[in-house]
Length: 365
Image (tube, rainbow, N blue to C red):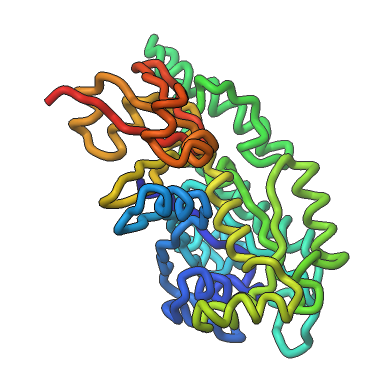
């Protein structure tokens, strides 16, 4: 499934360095000047999940295939982007194509690295980016809402729903709040997403910190975490410099390096997992001698939808899903043991897939 998380932020906050480390390539030029990333770079990364290795070991799988998440490195935003300043139009268009935003925030002090606004203030940086997104949304909605209202008055039920939702979003934006702060019911989410509002996208704050505080983050990162908690958003701490150094090491040397700098795992693992969670995704597995594989569905997806992720014919001809919870699969040492212990369940079309389910689909051809 093609889920994309856009890496955004002001120039020179470490976006491209983070992206390079995420994808373990030098595809995005990381340089100490504004707008070094002119075209968005897209990198597919595996979502780290130790459960997959455990399943593969039990099933004696020849191949292990993790689920993946796409990160898009987007050119740095500048104040006035909503009016086309800097690379504003391109920046905003690239964000529109992503499902979520990883907002990299500078939480380190380094006189050798230029700050586009000449000061280190992560909350002000966040406000600058958020304001430009809201201004772009406000202009876009105010331009479109007149046509929506005309269609709504014409008796079109869908147009009435869209217009009512647009008005709620406009109210939030005019109050200086992002569109995602508008009161949107679960059943309205598809209509809400169809508005294509930049400030409607879920946000993960990535605090780029000094190497010395890579484990906890320091006072600047604390400010961002406090803001994220207030907003109901997520925040993770990484040192992009450390991550870029880890990324080029052979796997055997990475563990020693992490221990030397006091980290239990790469910070990027937290970024990837947080990005995955930000999109409200869950993982289910298939396991066998040929391969053990992780698959992605949105939270709330039912068994036929999960089957359709593997192949459309599976969804069309869905009969049932043989289901084993991950913990039961491991405790019973595989499918046969789970079946004997009564831990294998037969689930029908209304079953909501749970994170960690090990599934085998039965379908009619």
